[in-house]
Amino acid sequence: MKYTSLNQYLKNRFSTKVYKIALDGGFTCPNRDGTLGTRGCIFCSKGGSGDFAENRALDIKTQIELGKSRVSRKIKDGKYIAYFQAFTNTYASVDRLESLYMQAIEHEDIVALSIGTRPDCLGDEVIELLERLNKIKPIFVELGLQTIHEDSAEYIRRGYELSVYDDAVRRLHKAGLNVVTHLIIGLPNETKDDMLKSVEYVCRVTDGIKLQLLHILKGTDLEAQYNDGKIKVLTLDEYCDIICDCIKIIPKNVVVHRLTGDGAKKDLIAPLWSADKKNVLNTLNKRINEIQEK
Image (cartoon, rainbow, N blue to C red; front, side, top):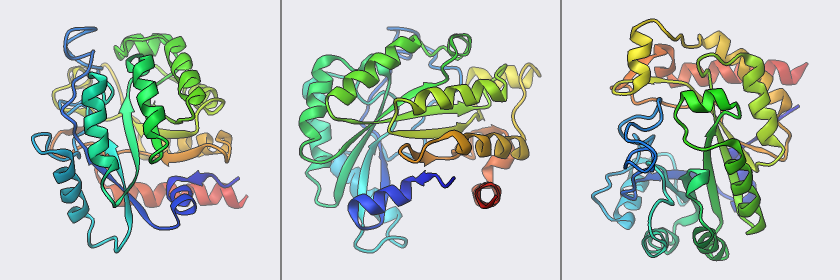
């Protein structure tokens, strides 16, 4: 069964090639500022998963122009999604959120906003704001769930229970918002079956899914555990096997936003094979095409 890729979905929806521009709105996270903790999730980089975002010292409109210039060779007269990526992008006052989001929405080349956040940082006033902005341009809300298994959630210091995710998805859908769920493939102590159960669970409620390879990055608590030999990472073959099994159970109505992910090369400790993005994607696509042709 063929899956619905993000590129296909965006082209069908906007009738043109659409690129994402990763932005940094200057946010922090309750897992960083002392509300829940100060060390972040166990896998999270110092950039709050926004290592490829633009400079937070710049205003949003300037960040967008810089992002456009980076892909100018690839796209001619195309459109863009403003992706608020770094840290928790609903973790601020509603007034501040509206100011930042509007800078992006008002840009003529921006067709939609994608907002990365945590399910426990979506108060009613925030969702009301997103619902209102969604009537101007489409809003995608990306939730960092990572796993449905509570023992894994505790291990990675996620900081909220699965029921919080369920409630956030329900309220976001009630407001007419598109929900994208992030899952990590390769968490320590999780079997392939555990990972597939996470995929199966979220596909019952989410509109889109991002599958992210677990990276060991410098400066994270995972680094010390990896160096001590306490955890292992997936090989490329193992990862491809799992992704192929994921594809088999993801329904066509769930858009696949990502099949893997990048760790900043300067911070990447393992798996080193993931640094060769072209080879990873080529290998993945070959394996997926093989199962789809059967």
